[in-house]
Length: 294
Ligand code: B12
Image (cartoon, rainbow, N blue to C red; front, side, top):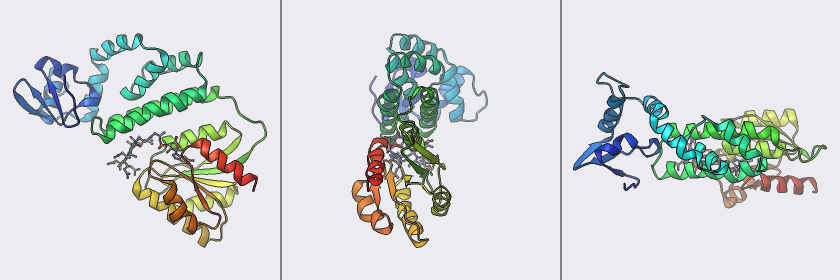
């Protein structure tokens, strides 16, 4: 079976095995070039999901694959994987069934932060690559994101707090126009468990909302997240808004859409108390430490 981003060569008997992550735009079945909607219909009719002429929705298809005996076949294949590989495949496949057991098993041998940083993060990165090259689609990405969130909530209580005395306070937000929060929430978990007080005010936060939180909480820094090119630009507005309201708060900016250069040249000059780029929570901690030491 040959897979590339645009097409998927299958034999008729392989249609049923077509994994959800690789639903193609079109497929070759025998000599016929079958379009996506007829492929969806074939799959749906075989399982009796939709008897009418209506095209099946993605939810139906997700259910189809989740309920299908294929899942059982996959589960027995998964049984031979070690717990870290199992967790990785939970994320890739967006599968929550058995997640708690897998994470608990893994926690017996692996440090919680290692699970987050090495397994969950790289699995989500892999999902990102698949999304980018067209081999998976948004609903499946969302399912993977849910798995990461759920796994984090199971792992988090097992993280030993780094310090009893609080090292500092930070307000965290994903900026306006952006609802991505997996990375920001990981930063929250890691900072919280390393002695920082984190006020995570959520996603899609306007400059005014961020400023209000800063005004109320008086943190040592504000951590801003952006994953879209458009929302990266929003960071400039936040810096401008804070400055024009006379606020002096260092910004720590992160997220895949940012670069050190952008933050240094475009955001920092607009903020009264500079702005720093951080690749991850650990870099953010280094910055917070430096800020504390003047
Ligand atoms: C998951 C995901 C989604 C999920 C988000 C679920 C959620 N609850 O977060 C859903 C499906 C909702 C989604 C929606 C969309 N997405 Co999206 N999404 C992704 C994906 C696949 C993974 C992002 C992720 O979670 N990565 C894993 C985490 C752990 O990494 P991270 O966020 O980068 O965080 C790390 C660091 O960056 C850093 N960090 C992050 N924030 C912060 C903050 C601070 C203070 C610090 C210190 C560090 C830090 O620390 C983290 C740990 O190391 C990326 C692809 C990719 N390769 O990134 C696309 C991607 C970001 N999405 C993209 C797009 C286009 C969209 C949509 C517009 C799609 C659409 N057509 O509707 C919408 C946008 C909706 C909106 N208004 O925001 C594009 C953005 C393109 C661009 N450059 O502008 C990407 C790059 C995919 C692509 N190539 O097309 N998406």
